[in-house]
Length: 470
RNA sequence: GGCGCCAUAGCCAAGCGGUAAGGCACGGGUCUGCAAAACCCUGAUCGGCGGUUCGAAUCCGCCUGGCGCCUCCA
Image (cartoon, rainbow, N blue to C red; front, side):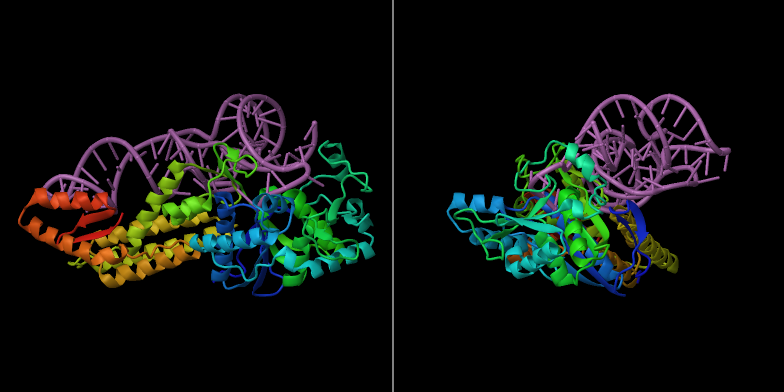
């Protein structure tokens, strides 16, 4: 295993650093989840796939991963949407959270260890705010509580900006109740009709940011190894989390490695709910291209932005089929290859294995790792064509499938799962084989074409034909 | 205005100091009754201009063109 050899780029240092965990063999990973107020789009899908890949590789490398992904299940947008639909905020969020679990599972994302929700952690949040007030890092004002940004000397270290420069940016709300325009809300008193929870300052709700600090402390013992999210969260969200957590805990760094995935672009712009250029995860699932989407995402480095196009999705689909073909192809009936073929294949396996791990250890370079998988796939096909035996072939295919699984790619798919149609297709194909022996080309071609039109692809072998779901 | 990122073959995309991975598409070939799949062959000097270096796609500067963030955002 590769534990101890991994290097990770951290946004905090802007450099690649050796990965060392707080506790040996255990990774505490906190990834910012969604605010469930609308259905999830493929940008969320990309992020969740990226961190799933990272988590899988860490586990593959021998670590135990405590993976926490939160839901920020109370905020203005949730309240607005719930009011418009005439349901409660929690009805809305519970429904969307349930859907989230279904959809991410369908994307082959491993479940996080814990999925905390802001509204179920109010006591921890209140306690943290009290602690911040006690230490002079926060203050109450008419039932609201604000974080005193200038009381935290490290403010701006993640996003690399200084408080004085931020002042000049004219987009900061001037709020008379704040001591300083940069201060941000930790607790907001409820307006009439809004959901609220009791606190020493008012019946109200937590501000954005504080829930993540509180849940991190509660579920991962304060400091974490990896803290992740999209690049759009660097400022203000993660900057504010650092301020809150480090001010509260009185130690730094609160997170050792800050990982940020590049954003998915659509039509040249960032896909965003507010712009409205959305492709939902559901659409992807309904089309049956979830695995192709994962391959598309992982064929680009996680830190780079990625533009989603139909063309690149289809290219990934073809690539996926290629890998699956190599992973599941059967040996030729007349396998009589010499030892040269077997030993060349064995060499290809160990080469691919080494390249794969080398790439993944280098800041999770999945594109390079996948290139090694394609190389292995070619070597397998080649060996099969050269008449490699079942044993040599299946050993290498197992390795290909295992490495694919480390990335969450399902390469070991059954040749054709069309449910109850299977036996009937088998029948048609075997009749067609007899027609072919009788050189009844017109009829056999017709069967092939008709099946193809119904999503079944036939491949003629030397002995018999095989079929698979196209 | 501030902070930051990016620009590699038709498209997507690795590499980040020693003479360009991989995928898709295209073309040629092998195999096949014809196909499909598979396999083989074929394509780039890395946005532009300077500089550093024995040597740069990789480092520095300038320019051009994109993009993200600056309190909604994975």
